[in-house]
Image 1 (cartoon, rainbow, N blue to C red):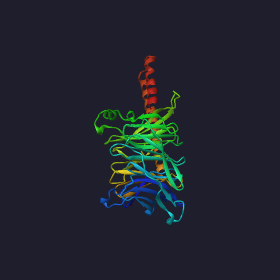
Image 2: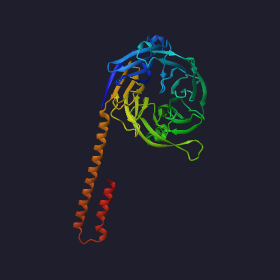
Image 3: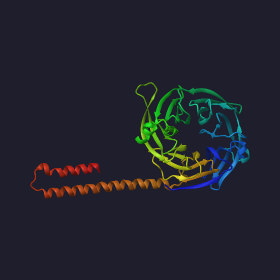
Image 4: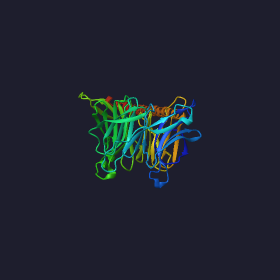
Length: 425
């Protein structure tokens, strides 16, 4: 796979990134929003939410919202770009982006547009770890360390957003929620957890309609290790993303060692009770180190690991699309993918606490290279089958000529041998 990278320095460590859209007719410039900072004021590094433009010339800051002594650890945005939930510890608030549909840069700004809302109630060290936005219905899903996914309804009161807790989905996970994802139709929601499972919830009823135990997708030697009770042997699901409405992809690993991606199918249960049956479609090792960030867009799933490396796989069969790239010196904290246009291949944006944003360009030769590889592989299989068949036939003729006068049962043995070889080939 042919890829190129470009590194852009930033003023702060970055912990979250969201893609806003492309700019201009060439589709070579992209607007993003990211959040980061130094945390405590003692570090001397400010905390902020920043909107910027990424292009051929680098990273250009458009506007920022300084968050004072508060570090924003997570931001997310919906397809319509209406809501920008921003997470601070176990609280979140809604921010608003203005002027990004206009050519006047002076009108662009980020502003706080709601009160703070607590959405994680763990007794010690509560923290929100993930959020997902359905801005077609103004719904926000938030998960954290207490293992419960909370659904919030967002209303707009004269430019000020108000959030109302609709449901705390139960039963929840027995450990921290690490990721959440809406289905394509927005009727289902999947969650991943450090308890080694993924849950699928119905938004209409609030019920848990499917439980996925990811340990059954691990290699046997790995699965045996997960039965140990040591912390390092515990299976952690790092991410869970919907693929359409009928499938999910999970990414799991221990605290150290290989990370695996697994694709699961979801079908209606024969019991007709509204639950879903789960089936294992494919599982592959995607990294030799635990994965720290995952992003899915179209036919691509991009992952970054704790060693600062970025990898790309296909959502179809989870096959790796090229080698991993060393993008950062510290763990990858977040990823974003630009849309796949016919004239412009997608780009991967990765961030870390190492004060840089790295753009990975997926050139148009990528698809051609993969197609050529597929054709070459098919040609090799075809030639190998022909070679085995020819050898088998020649061996059969030699046996028949050297065994003249033998019984019919013995003379038919080479023919059976030829048939067996052709079937194996």
